[in-house]
Length: 280
Image (cartoon, helix red, strand yellow):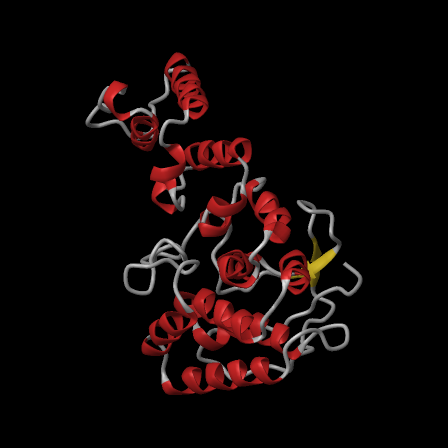
């Protein structure tokens, strides 16, 4: 991207705000995408593919019975504010008002993008994903703005972009972001990538490989939006799943129970039941 993204220092969520320019020079090269400098990861954000002890991976739980990608902004806001203390609620309210008043791009970086970078230390790791999604909604970020935040952002910020895609990008313009996430082995990024936007816009070939990627990395297939509908009658997916199961069996490895579940969806009457204790 033209302008490297910087974000404020990220002490614990309960500490006072640091100047927005604190680590403008503290950047890492993103070798996965080749997009140049990007901010150092928020210390409150667990390493890719992991979670903090005693916490649930962001995006695998949800406000009510919906996911971060499917929830409306009103549902997200109710969910987030209920879990924040008064200072954090005040900060989020101000960030949303600011984003709504100054949407779009202003200069090298918009104020609302800085607020997205702050969300982890302001709202805490449990609520940060949803807070970032709300800010993107308030800023009415389009595909270009979402791409900028994604490619110049941390893993947490990339997740927020993927969760926001279904409501903010009606067409396929956001597919390159989903495709990029599906090339990683970050399970939380993969969980965000296989939501409603992917279900709506990935072609059959890409979608099948996304399902296989979930099985390979251990992402629960519950994260795959519209799984029942898209898998139904998909004989090519059934073939791929059968081949994958055969490869694991030949290598002396267990076959994930989720594989049998998806295989059953492809042809319910013809598919045998999964072994009861099959985990891998």
